Amino acid sequence: MSLLLDSIAPHGGQLINRIATPEQKQEFLDKANYLPTVQLDERAVSDLELIAIGGFSPLTGFMEQADYLSVVNEMHLTNGLPWSIPITLPVSQEVAEPLKEGTLIRLNNAKGRFVGVLQLTQKYQYDKIHEALHVYRTNEEKHPGVAVVYRQGAVYLAGPVWLLQRDAHPKFPTYQIDPAESRVLFREKGWKTVVGFQTRNPIHRAHEYIIKCALEIVDGLFLHPLVGATKEDDIPADVRMNCYEIMLRHYFPKDRVILAINPAAMRYAGPREAIFHALVRKNYGCTHFIVGRDHAGVGDYYGTYDAQYIFDEFKPEALGITPLKFEHAFYCLRTKQMATTKTSPSDREERIHLSGTKVREMLRRGELPPPEFSRPEVAAELARAMKVFTENQYEI
View 1 (tube, one colour):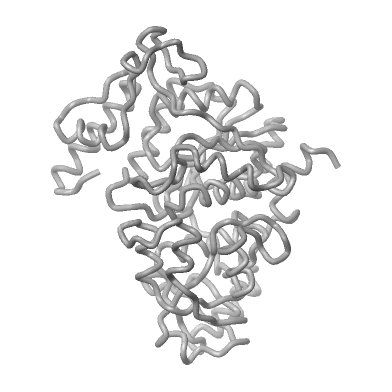
View 2 (cartoon, rainbow, N blue to C red):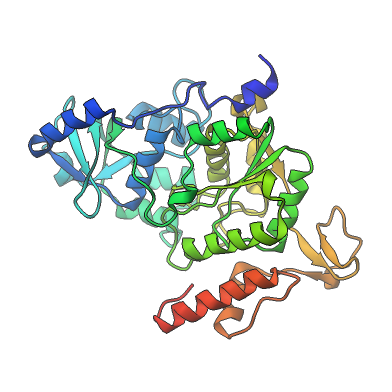
């Protein structure tokens, strides 16, 4: 088998589908009132969804203890496949106590709606500090990912799952493209090489620069912003999606880009999450994945390019997707264009860097980000969103 075919295969070789068939759904509904119930938070609902549609292939459910420990300690599943983030279902000791292994568990969302079923094969306790130190490289509770681990229940429930039915996304139904569908779209377009890109921030000139550099060497771009749970001070998903739509209308070739949503929640696990994000995009059919500076990072917990270095810890054929590593891009005043230190002859004083934090501060002061940082149409959208959120006493 060629390297191309190997690289575009789902992780583990098979795209998982855990969406209940009509017959299975009816069977579960008939039993609904007799099944013990566990309520899922927003992240768990996202994980359930991604397991079911194959985004987390080869996982068929929440991890049993052996896989969990192998992932936390070694960044591999017990079958040897690379996997860097534990996918688990935490509950409190009180919730776990009456649940019997070998039985079906009804899974409800936060609104009490029956959304899935877990076949409970195992329940186990775990070491929260150990998980934090290995997955997030810190045990500080101010780290948002660590804070989630410390707040959640002390017991993990494990076993295969079924999603009761696939519903349209409440905000972005036209951009809800699942892995099976994205693979069909890539084939229909004749794309043999596809680069995936994600950011939890609004797209700006540095993003545009590295994406277009990548487009020079592949057939198509899968623009795949994350719309699951994020930190409270991150830009809301609808604002980010508006910015992507603006960029695609004005600054990208329409026949070489597909915009779709990634329903996953952010973990803020830096290097480990970069591997995780790459494997998820592999399942969607991408052959390449862009990794920029501080991918999935937060604060000062990770080195600027740690998320790139971690790919060197895996054999390329084991990952099956090619990382495209880019330095921090900036606007070069000397050449009057976007560049990195690899392409710009400028001195430090001739480079315009703006962080997301600085942009939010400018917007709060009523200032538009400069064109060297953001396309004017995107800057206007961010200003509009800031005005709306300020009037409603929220912040972005």
